[in-house]
Length: 117
Image 1 (cartoon, one colour):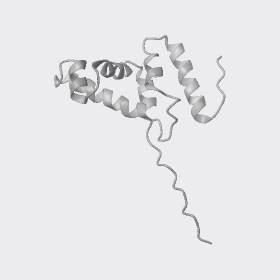
Image 2: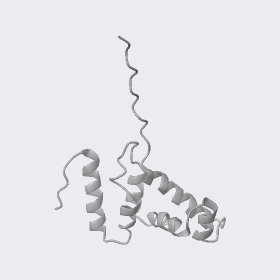
Image 3: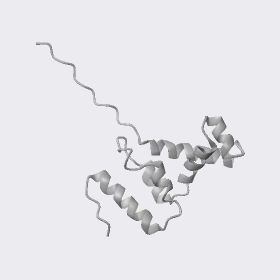
């Protein structure tokens, strides 16, 4: 009998939101240094719309604790748990709402059930 080759596990990737946050950080720095005059110009340089650039830059308005949390998400974190869209929806919301969302995400990451207090 010929042994079948073992299936290799797919390589775990960083969540896209981590990579997108780093892109937003680079774009913010480019704007601050005057390398681009607007979001639209950044978008043209990157081949995306100015609105998309604006959406990613909005991530940088999250509290520092959130940004640190996002940057530390491990490879293999399910994309559905932390999305750019859900994070952008938290910008400007009251801190208690932001903390509830963070708790929900943490519970999901650790496989525990989230129950709102």
